[in-house]
Image (tube, rainbow, N blue to C red):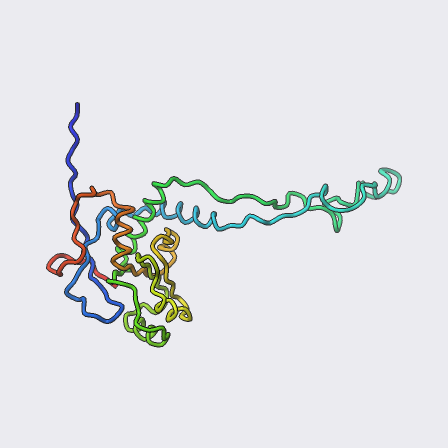
Length: 244
């Protein structure tokens, strides 16, 4: 009987902690689970998950009428022989104006099947690719002090997050003030972590997570043992991956 090998814990990935509210966080870093944020890059998995998600968005409601569904008489238009012209049947022929459509689209389901574990791997690969490309940021919380758009715009321009930024929160509800402040800013979106998918991670230029979202993603996607301790926020006396 073979003995089970003990799990070899990998070193956590440390990322500099940013701040949306302007508080000093330069001397702090967040420890990320390497099984989630340091996965080998698999472009084929990203493609599979993106196509699977886009297929699920298709309505599949296009519908055309065949010659049997078009309204009209079944009388033969002219005799088969004797006129010197081409043979024709009824007026619903696809060759005639107002007739049916040959091989036209019918309502169908475009959704495709993809295993749950492949989708989970796609999330790990997408998060790891964003971290590798220095397009991933972590903030203590996604919250704003007022609903004025100009205040949020100035702060995001100072951080370089003005366009192409997806904010993902792990709190039960995204902060209403920041949603109001960013509603009229093109190129920004605020979502809950449960709404996040692989296509969003690939599509958006940068992704900003709060600590609650990081915890939920690691709880859902981590392959490490549950009892393995991983620190949340530590001082920057370790090797830290470059942040946004």
